[in-house]
Length: 203
Image 1 (cartoon, rainbow, N blue to C red):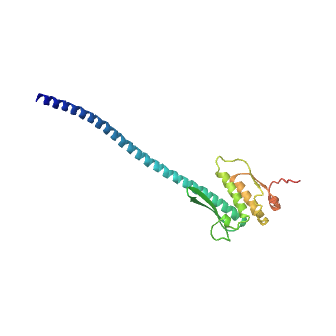
Image 2 (cartoon, rainbow, N blue to C red; image 1 turned 90 degrees about the horizontal axis):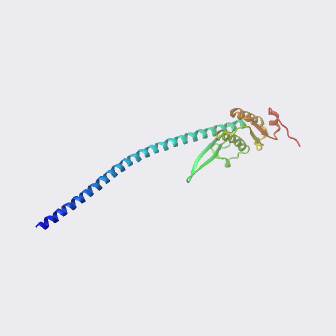
Image 3 (spheres, one colour; image 1 turned 45 degrees about the horizontal axis):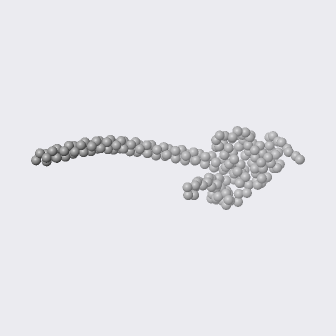
């Protein structure tokens, strides 16, 4: 009987030690669970904050893109109307091909009652006008800004000489609007006649 009591005491002591060990593990795990819960709450708050930041950046990106788009469209449309004295409209069309962004140049002219890609338009000299206007806009939106004059070398070689006065007026408008000196290299005698300062190069 005494032997059995000793065994029971031994077992009780062993259970007590095991209980103490389990209580220690429980306490440690409880602390880890609490820490994990706090970490989860912190990560959720960070996630919400990041999502808001992404939303703000997306709005800023869209707003910036819209400003650039409107600037390009209005100035190029103005240049076309100034040259041809007719209702031309230029439009940038953004799209996606897979994960890559796309940008198409669209033109509506008196001949085309809807916007068409430039390559589908009987554009002729209008491509030269669009190219000039785009150069001016790109120089203004580029950062850091380029300084100095803008040199146009036979920039409107496809444009009819009948539009010489309007072409010259456009150069003056661009020079004044962007506060840039515009140097035009041309064989168009009418544009040469209109120019305020001339340098003739002969053989």
